[in-house]
Length: 126
Image (cartoon, rainbow, N blue to C red; front, side, top):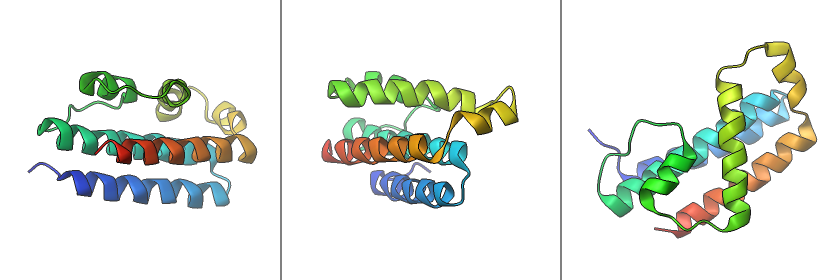
């Protein structure tokens, strides 16, 4: 059974809130992972709403954007490219200790802020 767009968006919001909670306890790279997951789900909700199809099984924000032919503001597009790239490193880290040192609270909170901005923008495309 395919998810309805509103269920994708409900989960996207939940994941974004989870990113905040995880950041608050210092698990920074997992918070960044949740930001990516949130935007992935939001884009899949938009995909379902706009195209009336089940979204492809992909983790790539860029692929979803391209499939929908979205015209993303440049600053958000740059951010989503960056988040997409670092998400792969987070999902499959070569070295846990190195990954733990790649993200601090300040950097993570900035990524959460930009992710929230992107989530709001995606929701306005409905």
